[in-house]
Image: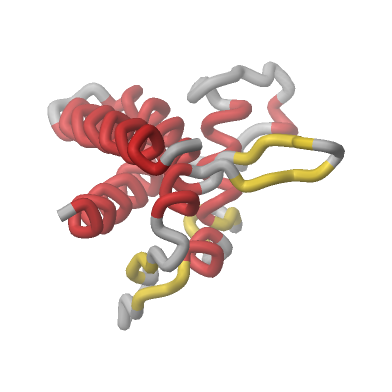
Length: 146
């Protein structure tokens, strides 16, 4: 896909992410699911093509050298692939948390089988973790877009 088109999608997604973060800040906690969905589009979306899993995330396509601050001190910048594999919450990596909220917890799909979803945690813990990931991502991408 053409770079200008991808950039337009990324800018739209970043705008939706920012508005969703504001909704969470204003007490609409359920918007964490929209945050997770935008994080998936931006950071860890995939598609199966020719029997192969292909990264289709917008940030990877536009900024293959994107680095985000580690979640734990000293917050050293990590390449996106490494950032997605660090622990986020409840024994899940960043990627696993984003994908489970999107694919099973109502971000994009709902899976009625509890064993397939998120660990048995207070919803506020999952919401807070997703919110924090959204803040970090939004800030990093705003800096890259200038």
